Amino acid sequence: MSLKDLLDASTDNSLSGQKWQILRQSIIKRLLSTGNATIAELGSELQSSVPTVTKAVNELLAEGYVVDMGKITNSGGRRPSLYSINPTCAYFLGIEVGRTSMSIGLQNIKSEFVSLELGTSFILENTQESLLELCALINSFIEDSLVDKNMIIGACINLSGRINSMEGFSYNFFFSENRPLTEIISDQLGLPVRLENDTRAMAFGEYREGVVDGEQNIIYVNYSWGVAIGIITDGKLYYGKSGYSGEFGHSTILDNGILCQCGKLGCLETEISGWSLVNQFKEAIKEGKQSKIVLDENSSSLQHHAIIAGALNLEDNLCVELVSRQSEKMGRYLSIILNIFNPDLLVIGGDFSLLGDYTLLPIQSALKKYSLGLVNRDVKLKKSSLGRRAGVIGACCVVKEKMLSSLINN
Ligand SMILES: [Zn+2]
Image (tube, rainbow, N blue to C red; front, side, top):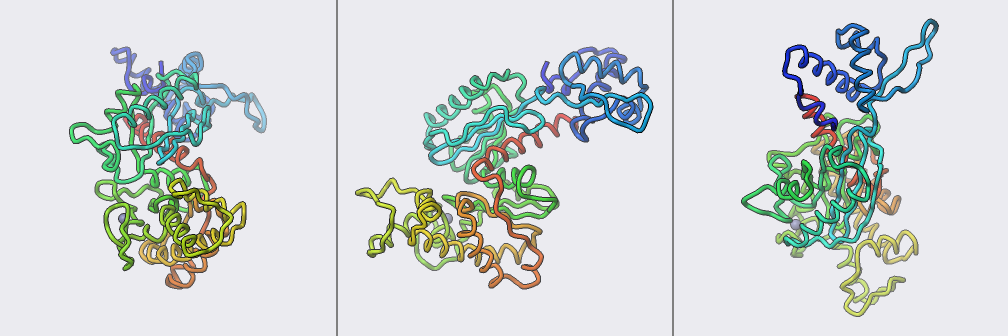
C-alpha cells in the first residue's frame, strides 16, 4: 500500500474501523508536517491514549510507513523512542525540460535524491513525436531507478513559456485545445502530473532548498537563454490570474527595432538574454573583434553556454566584455522590479549565475545607481546556490508541496 492509499481512504467502513484509520492518518500527517515525535507527544497532540497510539504506531512500523529512530536522551527515567516517517514510503518526480536537454530526479519524502540525471540529451520540439520521446525518457528513468511506480505520489514537469498550472495547459509547447497536457502526459506515465513554469519552479526550489535564508519576499531571476522572474510573496509563489506572471524578459521597453522570439519588437530579451548574447558575439566577430572562441563556418551551433564558458574558463576579453555589459543593463532594468516589489531578497539564477562576480558585480552596481536609495538598502542580492539542479529540485518541491498538502488537508 502506498502512502497515497493510506491517506486517501479507509478500507474498513465500520465506525471503529474509520476511527482507527483516522488515527493512523493523523499520526502520518503529524510526522510529515512537524517532524519526529515520541508516543507520549503523539498521544497528547492527537488526544489519544498511550496504549492506543502505541498499537497504531506498531502497525505503521510493520507496514513500513514509520521508522524507529532510537531512544532519545532525557534527564532521567525511561528513555522513550523517537518515531519518524519512513523516507522510502513515498517519492516525488521532478523534470526540467530545456531546449536541448532535460534533467530528471526522484526524491524521497525527506527531499533526498534517490536518482538524478542532469543534462540528458533531448531536443524540445513542438511536435507529438517530441512529447512521446519525453514521456519515454521519463518512463525509462523510473524503471532504471528501481522504485515501484505506485510509491511515486506524482510528477512535476517544468516547461518554459506560458503555463496554466491550475488547468494543466502549456501554451508554448504541446498545446491541445481538447485536453490539458497534464492529462495526456499522465496517461503516458501512469502518474498524477503537474505542469509548472520553469522559472517559477526554480524560484520555489531556491526558497525551499537553496540560498533563501528565512526571507519571505523574493524575486528570483532566471537569467538564461531567455529571461523571466519568479515571484514569492509572504512565502508563497505568486501566479497571477492564470499563471502567466513573471514574463519580465518580454517587456517591450527597448527602442531598438529588434524582433524578439515572442514576435514583438524591442523586448528586454533582445538585448539581455542568452540568445541575444549569441547574436552580439557574432556581430562583434563580424566587426573584427578577436576571441579565443572559434566559430564554425555558419556559426549556427554557437550556444550562450560557450560564451559563458569563454568568460569563465578562458577569461576571453570579448566574452567578459559582452556578459558584463549585458549584466549592467540587467541591473538597470531589475531596479524597476525592486522599486515595484521592495523584496527582501533578489536571487540571480540561471546559466548566467554560473559566472559569479562577472554577472553579480555589474548588476549590483547598476542596482545601486538606478533604484531608489531606500529600496536598494532593503534588498539583499545573492547568487543561486542550486546551479544546474535548480529546476529539478524546484519541480520536486512543487509536486511535494501541492500534491502532499492536498492529501494532508483532505
Ligand atoms: Zn519578447
